Amino acid sequence: MEQTTFKTWAECAPRLVAVAAGRAPADLVIRKGQWVNVHTREILPDHDIAIAEGRIAYVGLDASHCTGPDTEIIEANGRFMIPGLCDAHMHIESGMLTPAEFARAVIPHGTTSMFTDPHEIANVLGLEGVRMMHDEALMQPVNIFTQMPSCAPSAPGLETTGFEISAEDVAEAMTWPGIIGLGEMMNFPGVISADPQMLAEIAATQNAGKTVGGHYASPDLGPNFAAYVAGGPADDHEGTCEADAIARVRQGMRSMMRLGSAWYDVETQISAVTEKGLDPRSFILCTDDSHSGTLVHEGHMNRVVRHAIACGCDPVVALQMATLNTACHFGLERDIGSITPGRRADVILTSDLTTLPIEHVIARGVTIANGGACLVDCPHYNWPDHARNTVHMGKTLDAKHFEIAAPEGANTVTANVIGVVENQAPTKALKADLTVRNGVVEGNIEADVAQIALVERHRATGNVTNGFVSGFGYKGNMAMASTVAHDSHHMIVIGTSREDMALASNRLGEVGGGVTVFQDGKEIALVELPIAGLMSDSPATDVADKAQAMVDAMETCGCTLNNAYMQHSLLALVVIPELRISDLGLVDVRKFERIDLLETSQ
Image (tube, rainbow, N blue to C red; front, side, top):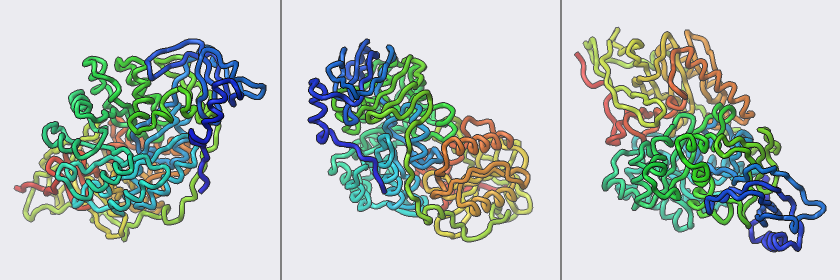
């Protein structure tokens, strides 16, 4: 692996000092821009920035003393000079892209730092998969910091993953150069109950002087929440309302407000700052999950900042939440997050702070994007064959594998049904009275009740777990299957036709993973994701085109939900209430216990 070399501050401090003092010329000077100072919340006109060794040496009204005959000059022409944007919490795998292609996609949008938790690949390939993601991240021309996944499985005893993460794995990862902390601690019941493994992982992280990520997906803000905070997580991104945000910052956490492809949790929480007047230093913006279509067509962190501004946030405060606040949270404020001496020279030129067009992007002192085009190479890791061969179904499936047997003699049954909530991660625990035909429980298209199944794909057991889901609005005969099924990443299949469900499942076994949509026995969309069944190393634009065709196919089948694919892929995430499906059965996440699919019969 060839890692991108970038000098530490100590290695280039003598030259930085010399350039600032005028004793040596800068490599690059940006002239006559409006300096957006996120430390003081000021906009200072007619300033210059002098850069050397990929770091900022000087910011002031006149950098002519830093300029030599070979110094590159960029004329800002009065544009705003803002720090490169930071995504405080995100999963690269959710973009269906490898770190290299994800970086290529977000560079034109001004993202220069990412804090990524690769717990998706950890569930499929274990610590080795995390190391692969970490190593490719270090090869990129932007800053990709890796958080060591904490929970694989996310809820022990309620799901089976391809690999499990141990406290020893966490301790080992803390010695890797690109590890910045512990990924989101999703097993919040484990922390609350002082589970020894969870506390050992947190202790290993804190002993290494690194940050523990949080994930508290519960509306309970009483003693259990206090116990979770006492257990060590330093931030949380699962808040969905103002009260959640306030509770977190009052307890000393950072409230991470997310706008991803399907999560719209900024508007409902940012009022804690814009209306309640709380100190914005404890609030951070992030994306969590963004698929390739969003990245290519809408943006990344620039999209989040624009949205926060549209929700009434002062533009410079919104920028603080996407730059300095993030850097401070991870202990990197001396290295990234602001345009000040000594920091990495990550700078964006934009002509408007409200609409935030990303016109020129500089990272580590080098122009990496201009006019919306990525201008640098994003090197690829050499992914081994076993990372590209991870779908092990054990047998060819047919329609009978998706039959749900009714109690003997029953004509109708009452079923527990997963209810999708548009634009939010939580689901609802619903019930539906369903008809029995020839001893098999049928879904109800008219009542928007489809079948859902989880097909085991790590150990070739051939196991299929069946259930029901409502909210997608599918019509006719169809099925959609995906090997992206957070977080265990078995194969999740939803359909109105058991025949199509079998076809879709077998198709993903053939191609080694991805997403497919079948209608009336024919495939109408396919996104191949050969790496761990989660990612493609094809260009983001190509993956986005296939992903858009997949979204269009879902609409053809009757689905009108915003970003329905993200909802599909999260229905196996057994740490977010209320109801989920796993390879072990239906899980009531309110109680963290398995429940019967069928309640009563008549």
